[in-house]
Image 1 (cartoon, rainbow, N blue to C red):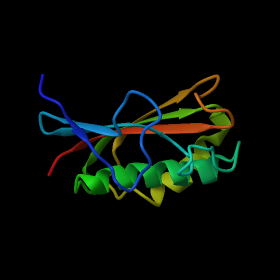
Image 2 (image 1 turned 90 degrees about the horizontal axis):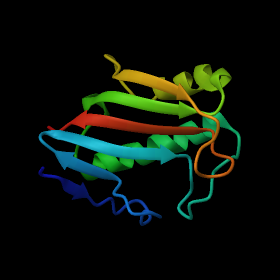
Image 3 (image 1 turned 180 degrees about the horizontal axis):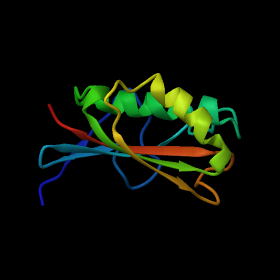
Image 4 (image 1 turned 135 degrees about the horizontal axis):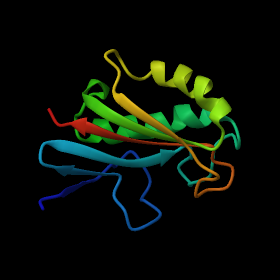
Length: 128
Protein backbone atom coordinates (compact mmCIF):
# COMPACT_ATOMS: atom_id res chain seq x y z
CA UNK A 1 0.00 0.00 0.00
CA UNK A 2 1.43 3.36 -1.02
CA UNK A 3 0.94 6.12 1.51
CA UNK A 4 2.53 9.52 1.56
CA UNK A 5 2.41 11.42 4.87
CA UNK A 6 1.61 15.13 4.72
CA UNK A 7 3.65 17.76 6.53
CA UNK A 8 1.67 20.80 7.73
CA UNK A 9 4.14 23.59 8.59
CA UNK A 10 1.28 25.86 9.76
CA UNK A 11 0.44 23.48 12.61
CA UNK A 12 2.49 22.32 15.61
CA UNK A 13 4.07 18.89 15.58
CA UNK A 14 1.55 16.09 16.26
CA UNK A 15 1.50 14.95 19.88
CA UNK A 16 1.37 11.25 19.04
CA UNK A 17 2.49 8.71 16.46
CA UNK A 18 0.28 9.99 13.65
CA UNK A 19 0.33 12.33 10.66
CA UNK A 20 -2.13 15.14 10.07
CA UNK A 21 -2.96 13.52 6.76
CA UNK A 22 -1.88 10.80 4.37
CA UNK A 23 -2.19 10.74 0.58
CA UNK A 24 -3.08 7.38 -0.92
CA UNK A 25 -4.50 6.32 -4.29
CA UNK A 26 -5.79 9.77 -5.28
CA UNK A 27 -7.33 10.51 -1.90
CA UNK A 28 -6.34 12.53 1.15
CA UNK A 29 -7.21 11.08 4.56
CA UNK A 30 -7.15 13.78 7.25
CA UNK A 31 -6.77 12.80 10.90
CA UNK A 32 -9.36 13.86 13.45
CA UNK A 33 -9.04 17.50 14.50
CA UNK A 34 -10.06 18.76 17.91
CA UNK A 35 -10.43 22.46 18.70
CA UNK A 36 -7.02 23.08 20.25
CA UNK A 37 -4.51 25.90 20.16
CA UNK A 38 -0.86 25.68 19.06
CA UNK A 39 0.05 24.28 22.52
CA UNK A 40 -2.50 21.48 22.24
CA UNK A 41 -4.75 23.08 24.86
CA UNK A 42 -8.50 22.81 24.21
CA UNK A 43 -9.95 26.19 23.25
CA UNK A 44 -13.09 27.28 25.08
CA UNK A 45 -13.67 24.04 27.02
CA UNK A 46 -17.18 22.69 26.50
CA UNK A 47 -17.99 25.33 23.79
CA UNK A 48 -18.96 23.42 20.65
CA UNK A 49 -19.08 26.51 18.43
CA UNK A 50 -15.57 27.74 19.25
CA UNK A 51 -14.11 24.24 19.14
CA UNK A 52 -15.83 23.38 15.85
CA UNK A 53 -14.46 26.52 14.23
CA UNK A 54 -10.93 25.79 15.45
CA UNK A 55 -11.09 22.11 14.42
CA UNK A 56 -12.25 23.05 10.92
CA UNK A 57 -9.50 25.69 10.69
CA UNK A 58 -6.95 22.93 11.42
CA UNK A 59 -8.52 20.75 8.74
CA UNK A 60 -8.40 23.66 6.30
CA UNK A 61 -4.71 24.24 7.13
CA UNK A 62 -4.04 20.56 6.42
CA UNK A 63 -5.90 20.74 3.11
CA UNK A 64 -4.09 23.99 2.22
CA UNK A 65 -0.73 22.25 2.81
CA UNK A 66 -1.66 19.81 0.06
CA UNK A 67 -3.38 22.39 -2.17
CA UNK A 68 -6.70 20.58 -1.79
CA UNK A 69 -9.75 22.87 -1.69
CA UNK A 70 -12.50 22.33 0.87
CA UNK A 71 -14.82 21.61 -2.07
CA UNK A 72 -12.86 18.36 -2.63
CA UNK A 73 -13.93 16.92 0.73
CA UNK A 74 -16.16 13.95 -0.05
CA UNK A 75 -16.69 12.48 3.44
CA UNK A 76 -16.74 13.92 6.93
CA UNK A 77 -17.01 12.09 10.24
CA UNK A 78 -17.94 14.13 13.30
CA UNK A 79 -17.69 12.99 16.91
CA UNK A 80 -19.75 14.96 19.44
CA UNK A 81 -19.96 14.40 23.20
CA UNK A 82 -23.54 15.77 23.22
CA UNK A 83 -26.16 15.19 20.53
CA UNK A 84 -27.69 18.56 21.43
CA UNK A 85 -24.57 20.22 19.90
CA UNK A 86 -25.42 18.94 16.40
CA UNK A 87 -27.27 22.11 15.37
CA UNK A 88 -24.46 24.41 16.54
CA UNK A 89 -21.87 22.28 14.74
CA UNK A 90 -23.89 22.46 11.53
CA UNK A 91 -23.99 26.26 11.71
CA UNK A 92 -20.18 26.36 11.85
CA UNK A 93 -19.79 23.69 9.16
CA UNK A 94 -21.93 25.68 6.70
CA UNK A 95 -19.39 28.51 6.93
CA UNK A 96 -16.59 26.25 5.72
CA UNK A 97 -18.02 23.87 3.13
CA UNK A 98 -19.69 24.84 -0.13
CA UNK A 99 -22.57 22.93 -1.66
CA UNK A 100 -22.79 20.19 -2.59
CA UNK A 101 -21.87 19.26 0.97
CA UNK A 102 -19.74 16.20 1.67
CA UNK A 103 -21.29 12.96 2.87
CA UNK A 104 -21.33 12.97 6.66
CA UNK A 105 -21.58 10.72 9.67
CA UNK A 106 -22.11 12.04 13.19
CA UNK A 107 -21.32 9.84 16.17
CA UNK A 108 -22.11 10.72 19.77
CA UNK A 109 -19.36 9.55 22.12
CA UNK A 110 -18.95 9.54 25.88
CA UNK A 111 -15.73 11.58 25.75
CA UNK A 112 -12.82 12.63 23.54
CA UNK A 113 -9.12 12.20 24.18
CA UNK A 114 -8.52 15.73 25.52
CA UNK A 115 -10.40 16.93 28.62
CA UNK A 116 -12.95 19.61 27.75
CA UNK A 117 -13.06 18.67 24.06
CA UNK A 118 -16.62 18.29 22.78
CA UNK A 119 -16.11 17.82 19.02
CA UNK A 120 -13.65 16.05 16.72
CA UNK A 121 -13.80 16.08 12.93
CA UNK A 122 -12.04 13.97 10.31
CA UNK A 123 -12.37 14.19 6.56
CA UNK A 124 -11.53 12.37 3.34
CA UNK A 125 -10.87 14.47 0.23
CA UNK A 126 -10.14 13.78 -3.40
CA UNK A 127 -6.73 15.02 -4.53
CA UNK A 128 -6.82 17.53 -7.43
